[in-house]
Image (cartoon, rainbow, N blue to C red; front, side):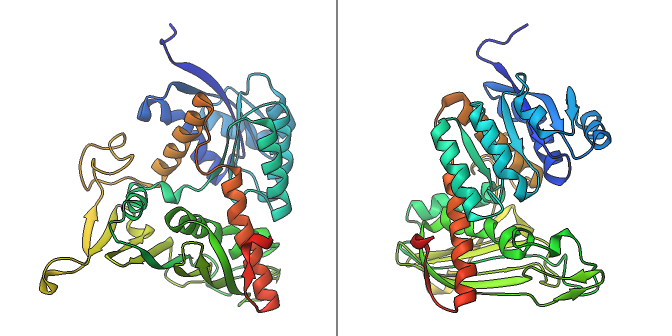
Length: 372
């Protein structure tokens, strides 16, 4: 029996690993969590070999599987495409899907290079079909609330931003070389920095100019040479006039998910750390000096996108919930035809800043982001 106002939509997901699983679970759950008008049908999943594709099909509940992305994209039962494959594959897949008029959700970074991003944005906008770039961390209820506080002027005029995305999965120099240690797209600036750059843009708006240093600390590992970067830092000036500082690292010993930021304004300040993702720290410059201080706000039903997951304040949401929120937004874009942030163009803006940072590190000078 067809439910009035509810239409099924065939979903094809490319990639069955870490993010492929996350998006598969999200598409299976989003209709129940958010009661969406479009209900995803897990139509086809693609992986690198027939055996792995069949394994993921059975595990995640897809109707069919393939090891050829072209079969998935061209299948008439696949209405929308989710790209969760390595960066160097994003461009070709997206362009093929847009040529068929199919909406595309693409994991960050948008492509393996800024040239890829430009081509993908051109194809997306020429097709006029919904498109989104995957930046999940900014969708926590706490970070959504931080965006609201800043936009509402709660902390006044923003004067300074500090952000980091720091992890330690390659902090041990004896960790063997792998695909992660080869190619710019897999380095820290290609892999980790886009998330925090996206957060900076979401919270403060465009970046005008920057200066950066990017470095490989462990140039040799068991099994081979390292050809990409371990960490990088930048200073920047936002179009609003605010100053900024960001640091990105895969060798930050002790940091597991160090997606953290501080925002300072003329009337207050905000602090957030993804390792405690259900809390936001807020300082208001008001009242007696003796009672001023940062207040820890535990997320709950009063905060964005919290209630669909849990009725209890302080009970919290998790990583998978961020992906489900993304799935809701993607389906909403398809259902309404209206762009939902972040589009491919928003994803390209992140890549422009990465390109400017890499150029700054090479040339040891400030760079205007608009020139990239």
